[in-house]
Length: 102
Image (tube, rainbow, N blue to C red):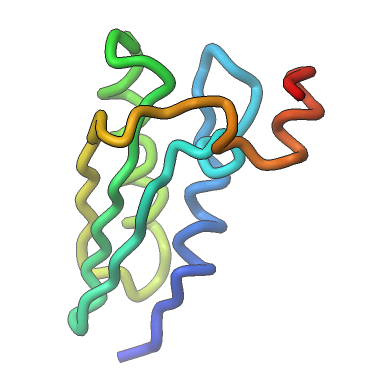
């Protein structure tokens, strides 16, 4: 079985965007954690910018599909959490620059 890395998972997650914000979910700081078990099952813990995000289900399903498409991944799950709450300080410097957030 090939060795799956967190970098591979994060690269796949960078292909997922919040449809309302033109920045990927990694650079937005929505991904809180990635765990890979010995059977190459990937578990992603993430949040949304607000608890009322109408796209939460779609974004989580897109993230799961992108990760499951990585060669060697046997399964993927996504858990959306609300604690700790997301705030703009979690964004990458590139995302902050793109969105004009200081």
